[in-house]
Length: 374
Image (cartoon, rainbow, N blue to C red):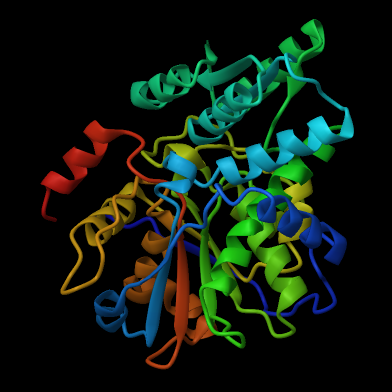
């Protein structure tokens, strides 16, 4: 495996007073919503004892989002919560057209939500999005629009078309003047943390949580929830592809920073060059480590999850879904991670959670990766 591991370490508690993006009322709002939707059942928190032992940890758990609400990614948490809030607020009505840009998972979540709530949907995809991901979105009844360039180009095209036609953008990334809906989406993502706590003893707290990066929405949700609920929060570490590590670049600069394409990575759900400014506002004071890895680490993590040792459960994760574990493996094994490994100080008494954010979204790719042994 070639290595392009890059780690940026920040200090735990560098802004100890930060409580994240949301309030107690916000978290209560999420709890009420899901209490009224028992059909939106939790996803499992799966123990991986054999893998934990092999990497020198006391416990390793995977928050398994591979079959969330009958789909294969966590994104429906945010899309369903946000769109139903918009309906309740009167900001949209049934029959209104919903649009978004996506690398696959968010688009499918918006399309699925739109169909369930009686709204047409249009999803804008960069040319590089794999055909199975696009087909899954079309299968939810949405119109798929291919856009030349990157995900960030698709974001701009979707916003322009929505403005011209009076459609509603349901985006998980923010920009100046567009923050309410991304905030609702990130708030919906925090339900994942509620589920995690409900699955564990009352005083449980992990020592570290590894989270896929992307534009920062899921990361901001996990970091904000952790800062609000745990007086001594875990280490929060994010993982990105080395070719488009926009969160890491932004953390180094202390402000949102664009990473130019092209983005050469199979981690399609994380293939973006611009952070969400609103998410980054919540991330910077809380997140401790920024890891960038190449596809070799993601492939290895997919195989480790899909072909587990001993009695560990098998998890069919896509490349983006396996990214958090890829970052953990790299942080334990790559010599370039020496400083990060010392900073995290994880050992035989430590508990780590990795968020497996997507399942097998591209079956031919998954089968190819699983067919190799290296």
